[in-house]
Image 1 (cartoon, rainbow, N blue to C red):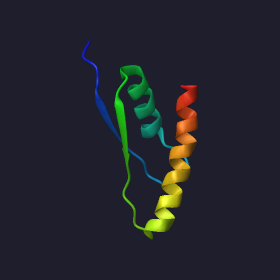
Image 2: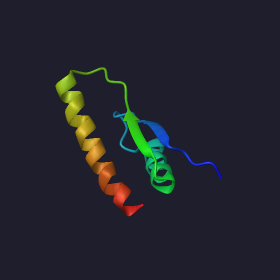
Image 3: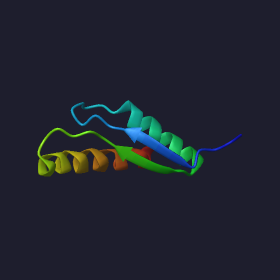
Image 4: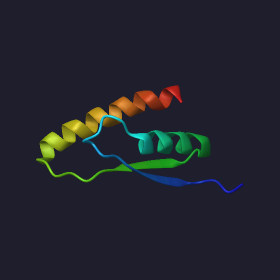
Amino acid sequence: MQRFKNILSYVNLALDEHPALERGVRLARHNNARLTVMTVIEEHPAQAHNRAVWCLRRYAKFSHDV
């Protein structure tokens, strides 16, 4: 079976749940692949940065449980 080497996952920071990110984390772990997370922001960069850091920290913790 061919394995993924790079996975791109989109995160909508306006939502509380991120199923695409959860799936990306599982795929990356299963395939020992690099995971890149992206989003589109419409707010001031400092506010967006704080939300992005919160989201990634939350899912970094989640990824250890997968």
